[in-house]
Length: 368
Image (tube, rainbow, N blue to C red):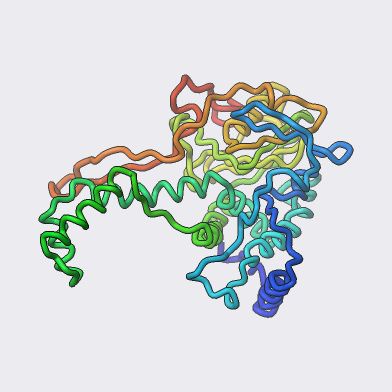
């Protein structure tokens, strides 16, 4: 994305740092952080309320957008390994606020005029905003933790006492029989899942920002379309939804670079759909009631916890979707052709359709 406008000039970034430091010292910043921007959820509000449904509990309530989908200190960058002066704990939350503020006007343009009305700078800014919606949520965090745990379990699976002795010796550590026995017992606890390594939340928060920059480039390069829908469109706490499309499996979550379509509800009556460069959707730029219902099913099925809609609607309460699958799975090992000493593993994120007969891909005309 070579033409993407830099989000901030150095002087502006320094001002952001200073603002985060002041809020931390003064204690004026809220500790409740939004997983989804309140400014975005307001598009579904009626009389200042939206409907919030916990999908797997099938419990629903009305809430002001400002109080929906929040967690305490969710983006806080605080750790003994982080210099609070160099990286204020509230920096990421401050950055999100700035990016969300820019996105409000861009959503208005997309809804009323379509992607063609965006400047390259606006398209770049919104690509980054969308990528952050992918990496800021629960799905990204849980999968990240499990992948790190799995890496260490896999690394030490099948380790022998001879192997432990060799590792200790190469590391210059004591390697008596007692040392080897103790180290071997510790590694077995890791393999069995009794002890595990996982990244700290501040590390995941920082990684979410760096990964969003790369994801944004893929989103920027896609074909963007705005579809008008019936005024029944819902959204969720993972509002950027990957739709693999044929011939991909319905049971595995597609990635930002591989999904045939990536959708983002702009409001109750508008949907942004971003297709791979070679995919050109057929038909009108309006979705009928059946197509909108199919999209709603995809949105609800992509939910980590909460789905949102107009308070006068009950779609998210009544939409049947399977229970969530494990957030991360590994297959293998598989032999590497030409190298009998090497093995490879395949990892992926299952969808809610992993353990059931999945429905057809939504909006059939997109794929024909």
